[in-house]
Figure: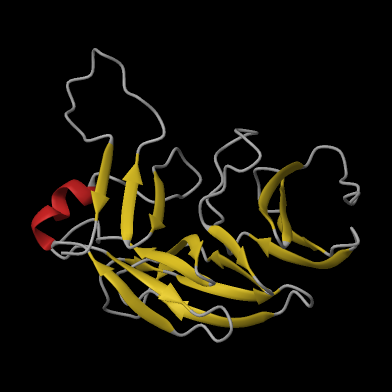
Length: 214
């Protein structure tokens, strides 16, 4: 299959191969999702502007280096950028939004909740796996949910322990910066740093965390 031509100066990252979904960007506010049919034709172009955060590393740091966008079946799911919540709420919030593969139109959105954020991180058994991290301040740990790509309905999969919230808070989710990798497989959830620190650093921050059902 021959993929569509991309204009000079735009980075290309591969979100998925089945279906084929590309993310085009310029490290600015012109990010665009392109869905491609089996015949190599563009099915839809989704302009993300500066309202969404696909969680791509700065520069051309690998063709698959986007953490907050996944594709499954006829749906592409990407997280919105963080924004202020309702008046009087503490902390920013965001949503995960599902787009139709063929039309590029929004199908549904999942709210993170006041003072919380949510990020699609994986696909398993036809479901979107999303991580709702622990708030930066507080004693409530994060959780992992499964989202039905057809209608956006969510179901809890894993509740992270409040006793380990401080370690979890040491890992930050993507916001156009160096980020840990978050993934989920067979009922287990993993947070991992992408970079090793120098030997002169005194910080005892963990390099990885793993969670599973009790």
